[in-house]
Length: 151
Image (cartoon, rainbow, N blue to C red; front, side):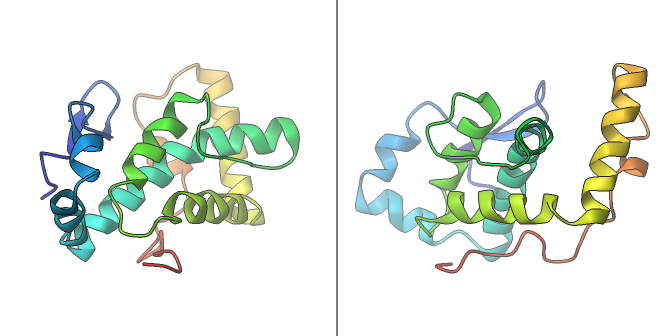
């Protein structure tokens, strides 16, 4: 279970979102940071997974158009900004950068990039996918995404 004072689930977007009604103010105080440091490993992993999920699409698009994925804080991309907000809910200050690097490295793997291309080809033909998207994705890896070096 994720802490409601920091996160909310957006049904229309299908992802976690940092609660824009005060989490930044709460994080500026020691008691707010203490609450974040008390998140369980499972809660932290869920936040990391949501971050990576939000960043993966923009990173794949960057790699396709520019040859390399380069996601950074302060991005104009909506999904990346949401992922950055989620990163503040993790104890390591470099969790965003670690996730961006991990995504870039993962997208360089031949089998992962092949899956991205299959998905993109299917989306290009169909326009949208309501069902069957899981069959186009690689199998989930246990424990992925891993924690950053500072975690």
